[in-house]
Length: 163
Image (cartoon, rainbow, N blue to C red; front, side, top):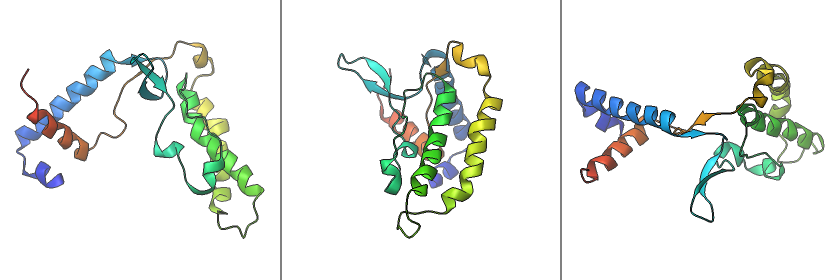
């Protein structure tokens, strides 16, 4: 994909960038949501927001046994807090595990003070305390907009019939 991009002229790159930016702006304007999560179809075929399905929420090894809040989240504070809660639960899980267990990871203990600081200090500093009571509003956006999938989208669009 990168070779394709490098062969494009500057005006072509600018045109693609403007087109993708217009899609992002349209999604931000027209796709207002009141929860954070993944999009699903419900039993009536309507689009609904449900639990997140990202790698962050599906960890392997010992973390498979740690329960986690996958949403949907009613506020961005809850979304940010969810992976921090997994880290804290992991420390508790490791405390009960013998250090010679193959799943034991001492590095988690080293990260624990930073994790707890994020939970106790950074989140309250970043998000206003009264914000949870305010109506929540977020927009639909692509979780990993990169050169690879941008060119893929452009290639698909070029194969679509003109409307």
